[in-house]
Structures are given as C-alpha cells and as structure tokens.
Amino acid sequence: MRKATRSTLPKARSKGLVIKRLADEVLVYDLETNQAHCLNMAAALVWERCDGRKTAREIARLLEAEGEETFTEEMVWLALNQLARFSLLKERIELPVHAATLSRRELGKRLGMVGVASLPFILSIVAPVAASAATCGVPGSPCLTNARCCSGICMGGVCVCLDKDVPCANDAQCCSNRCGSALNKCLP
Image (cartoon, rainbow, N blue to C red; front, top):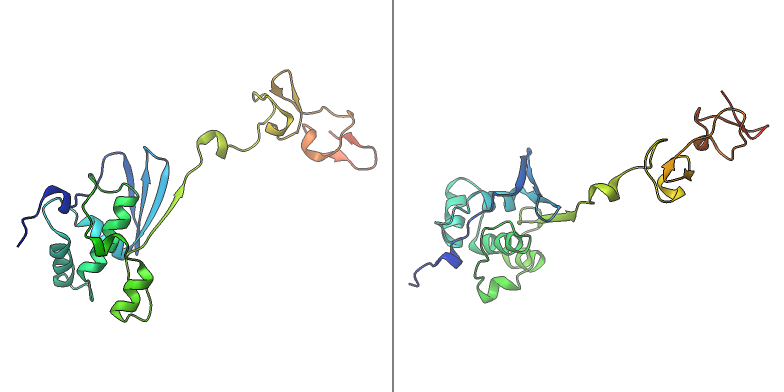
C-alpha cells in the first residue's frame, strides 16, 4: 500500500473566507478572489472533513459510517477536484488520473443513480467590486459622466438635480422627483 503524502491528504482552507452554513448548503465568500461559492450538502460534507489527516478513501468511509447514504471514494474525489479548482483547499492535491476528468454526469451513470442531486456540486460566481455594484449617484455625489448620476446630470464633477420651474425631461432630473408632464418643468 502506498503511503499517503501531504498532496493526497486534503486540508480545507479557512483563512480569508467568510462561511455561512444553511440548512442544506454552505455558502463561502472568498475575500481574496471576491468569489462566492455555494457548496451543496455532499460537497460541504467532504470539505468539512478535509483536516489534512485523512485520505479520500478515509473520508468516504467516515461519511458512510456517519450515516450518509452511499458515499463512494469517487464521490469524494469529485468533490475534492471541485474544491481544489475553486481554491477551497489549503494546498493543491494530487488527483488520481481517473478522478481528474471525472464528471458528475459520468459518475451518476456509473453509480446507477436516478438523480445527480446527491453528488457533490459547487456553484461559483465572481462578486462585483463595490464600484461596479454601486447604484447611481444622488445629488452631491462625485461623477465623471451623466450616466453615473440618478438625475442623469453631472455638472462640474458633481451629480445635480433641477429645482422647481426648471425645464425637465423626466422625474429623475427633478430634486422633487416630479416633472410636470404638461409643462415639462420640475414641480415643487
């Protein structure tokens, strides 16, 4: 039997992560990459047992002993491959050749499962940086273009709105948020 090395003993990363456990999934926000990950229960179960002292086979046996239905070593490798891809493990792990190309669909067929919902799965998105996620600027906010202002008016590098009785094209341009349709002037 081959001796387990550090590269085959996965350890979950915790530094730089915000972790929120929900009823049937775990949400992980990576502060370093601004990525948000949603681990389904199967992926979360594997990740939570990655302590740097157990092999994939030992994790599978542990999960089965804990009462998780059928949890094979292949399922653990599928989860580890995804965890490694999203940098949720402390170190890169050495995947066996058969595990490096293993897909959920292929594993579902091989195990004869009707649904693949019980297989490990991680959904990941890149969170927008604060400047990209910001809404339009209110009057007094700094701006470079009209598009950055809620009113659509940027003057001298500051978002502005129009006072009453000033001609307007829409409600957003008026400080009162009321552009009279008949007069096309800002209302009080």
